[in-house]
Figure 1 (cartoon, rainbow, N blue to C red):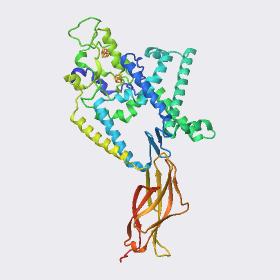
Figure 2 (cartoon, rainbow, N blue to C red):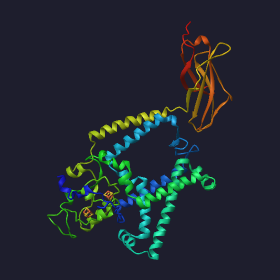
Figure 3 (tube, rainbow, N blue to C red):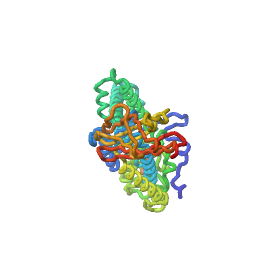
Length: 471
Ligand code: SF4
Ligand code: SF4
């Protein structure tokens, strides 16, 4: 049955965007129109609105999202995460990847075509501007082949100018997610002479975005994107993908409107689905790695089916088995397994988030220090204590020794311990333990971190003493 729709196997030997000499084949996709595309425009408006408003949304004075890799500070849904949250971050990452695997196994590459910022900007912003200035695919081809007249220069210059401006806007948006919208505003106000590093960063990002959207284009999805490369192992025959109904369409051949040809399928071989494809492939060859599920070919083919009075949906969202056996999307064993793992991980992640302490304390021995015997005969150890305040309020803290009883703690230098919101402070502390309570080289030491009388956290560490002590 499979060979029925694998009409032409040559597509397996080459890339749709590279010719026999290895040169790039520039893709001129036909302007998409139709119901599915209208829905896609609506989804794009919603997603881009969310993307652009993200840095401006605040939760208790903090951004909703911040990915400050420079200061190693991350805010996700208004929650601040520090490098010390590495376990939580690890669980969140594993959950995310399992979700991606599960989602892709069930719904194919719909993320790529409908939600990925690369596709949204490329197909719904940059490509639309190109259509507006240079016209549809054939007009663009003609313009590129034409001599450099003043009209062509004006069109090309205008397009590139708008591309650069939009790339500049996107690079500012990226910066806002990295360093916060206030820092970007300060950077703009200060100008390049005072903020040369930030300015160079903006220029580099702008150049990358311009290069990707003006020239590199679909190659980002076909050649670079790791998610795209994973499709071969994530998809199965029950995955929902943009698919050509070969049972209905083959054998393909020319058909006139209203003509009933008993020996022909519904595909009239007009190739409009190929002309609409932004990655230049022929979906009639079956699911291919280059397909980003943008659904442009669905609209293109639906228009054709309308014209030849055949039902829509010759190309549609369906699975291989759905087409071959008339089966709906079904929960395979693999899908059930992924779901179980995903639910367990989400449960673990939720528990870790709910039980996450307001402060996190790290107690480390001062390097090179073992123990000292004081004039009163007590044993003392020196510690570096680092406290992170994960809340949005300043906290006044004090630290007490819980175990062993009778031990005392004193801070070197300033006595008060005030930790500003979302900040970290550290200090050096002496812990003194009466000699009769230090019975081994290592004694368990438990510190309590208090805000007023409320115990926020208990931290355990070792207290070092002389060897061979016994009563
Ligand atoms: S085959 Fe269809 S869905 Fe896939 S990339 Fe091309 S136009 Fe988009
Ligand atoms: S647009 Fe439809 S009818 Fe035309 S070639 Fe593609 S699948 Fe066949």
